[in-house]
Image (cartoon, helix red, strand yellow):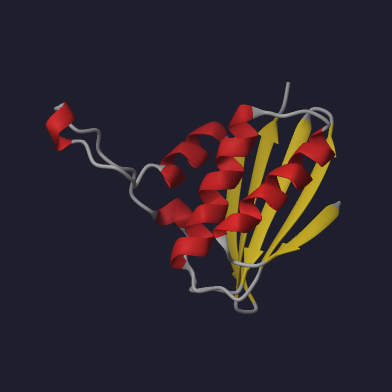
Length: 125
């Protein structure tokens, strides 16, 4: 398992993407999207002082664990958004967690010693 420590700042997303690609050896759009949605939500809403990401890749399975010391939040309990009936009702935002849950093969959450732990398992072809 490899680990990267990040500041809770949006510009750190570039370092996170490079870190994940280095471990996968090639880019994967769904993995990038999952990582981006989770990271951006932590930065924007958690008030965390740090974000740590553990990555382990054993063909064909990628495991990513996001750890932060922000506000306790279990994204698995968040209600899925409802699709708008018309384009005029559509709003920007609110779909990130839903998309991450849909694209992941497995996803787990725990709050341990004041830290959020979100583990995402994704089979990578």
